[in-house]
Length: 576
Image (cartoon, rainbow, N blue to C red; front, side, top):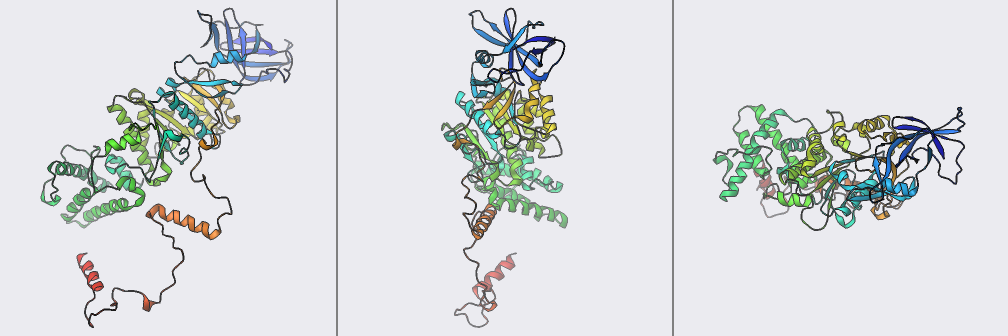
């Protein structure tokens, strides 16, 4: 095809005498060239092509990065290794790397490899990834919306689970997309069947739920910090003695518990302690502080959207083992992945739920000495670990950062998925040794990727804005060589898709009134737990026919005698 006309460090220029016919392999950006050396074949990738009318007589020239060489081993087989020991000389012939050469380059020598697609230059050459490097050193998949990012994640996870039956995966699914992507391997859970008791939340997570992500009231926080350990101690003493004495008749001590200790307690015990303390106060402002705190707890406890936390708030029982077994697939039912549908949870509680999930995963790995490999896949990772410290829930960022920095020592691994990597904490994404970059047009996102990789083939990131759907640039330690590849195509039934659109009726199949009523029903059901849309609006009842607690129904009561309804109302007022 051409000859070497310049060599500078790990880069060379190759001149071409004439345009290459369409029927032949053509030297274009991203294609591979080979140059013969004494004992090896030098492999380079084309980074730029331009016309040339210089004195050498070449019509075009290509800029080539020298990435490695193919050598012969003792048994005569070909093996690729990164780095170049013998550089090409001026005039050395350059030709397109053959299919066999590509297979040698991308035929990983790792003991466990997974196939995630094929090389963009040749569909017959599989794209293999080193499983152990991919898992143990974290990975990230980044790309704009609509480029096949979720499908790529599903391909990677399916391949990883097929290679390692002992791997457990937890997908934090922000948009309810992955419910059908893993078939029988997956447990899909959400607000309807998720059980994450409130007492498993630490103090920061609990206060974030109570205040709905808004700034907490310092005086109320102080009350919670003091009384939650007392409620835990009271529950433990009641559990040991089998009796439940009135809180007001005994002196409750913290018993060594802290507000962060993951041990059960009853929400009614906490409320009783707050109420008891409020009754002893003479200052009206202090009493109102306690009263507002009680009202907050009561409101969130009775909100059906928080049923996953408070369903058995007054029943008790240590369910931590069953919760962890179900969440992290430790119950041995053959399913390896849990898909946690975050979009079904109250928006105000999502940050706290993500935080407690990440924290439980790390703590389980820590105290189990990494007995089981656990992979946490975090969709929309920039939401929970923003580059701006003032944005998001700080404890969630700390939990994610802790897994990124220390998780691999305890068998807890991380997979980040984001459409805005520039908004992701750079400390966290820098811990990902393998990057899968799909199409992105934002300059800040591309700049971050360049700064996060030290690979010699980082020039491939210049191709990112022009990648097609499903195309990806693979960089890092799990890749035999950084390259452009295409993800495997998933069956139509496994393609990630939001559950909001799956099964949606065709436009026009619902009448205007029916559509509005359906929307209102779902809207109200989300906050009430039951349907509140009536079949038909009730007719107005004349004032004279409306029931009233002050109007005596037809009965045998004599004139002037109080009716049962009136007595009930009076008793309720007196009680208040």
